[in-house]
Image (cartoon, rainbow, N blue to C red; front, side):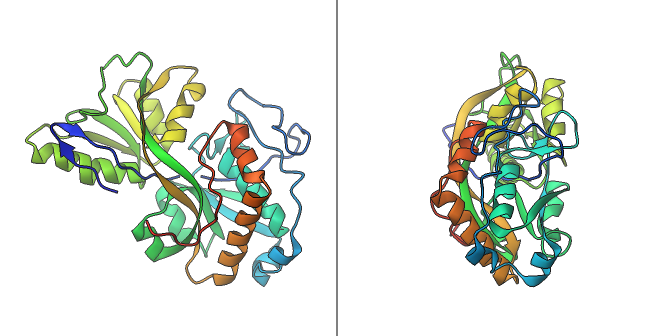
Length: 309
């Protein structure tokens, strides 16, 4: 996506990136189809115990994965509410995590999260992981490197300290310090579009503070090192809960774009299995119910393979 600077104002057009999955032994149980009892105020885990294996879809899973019995999901587990760690710092939770668990059940597999820095996730797919579910915005460069299956539409937002003490204006970011996660669309947009627009207009450059983990970007806004962070709208909106109200969104949600499950380009069998499993969860309402549990909107109705970005 692209943005331009018009009459000193940035007009928004946005994409995004980041997600994960797994439940912990001994976690509180709940009735199928309902939110599990929260381990913390930020835990809205959806109970997937009612999701059943679909034999005709499970039969599509490559033999090596089926025999292993696990679906290894690459994720950067620091991107609440999509994928992050619960208060015990061990259990992975989030709507992408719940989705991964549900997909695994449809395929007759035990979904397991492999946590890693976001920028390293796609290169690992097909080697150390089977798929990536980590808020990956569908972009041309990613479509060249891997297969992507659309499942949600998400925008981008800025988050600042509550009360906006620095007077951060999303429409005038030149000269401001902005934290962002490395490898995300937001970093690319800040660098290639917004900062370029500032310099082209003869304005002060943006101080872009790039961090391998979104949690570090969030912490540095709370601590005052950055005036704002720029991330998925779901992440920015959830930051208030994670920081006990120390952060708030400013400027609303900028234009949304689809995100996708990532599968290796040369793995046609697993790609088909994942696409059909995702469509099944859309059709039976499970996917929307997962997002409802987390208070998130944007569920897609069609799991499209490699949609144009």
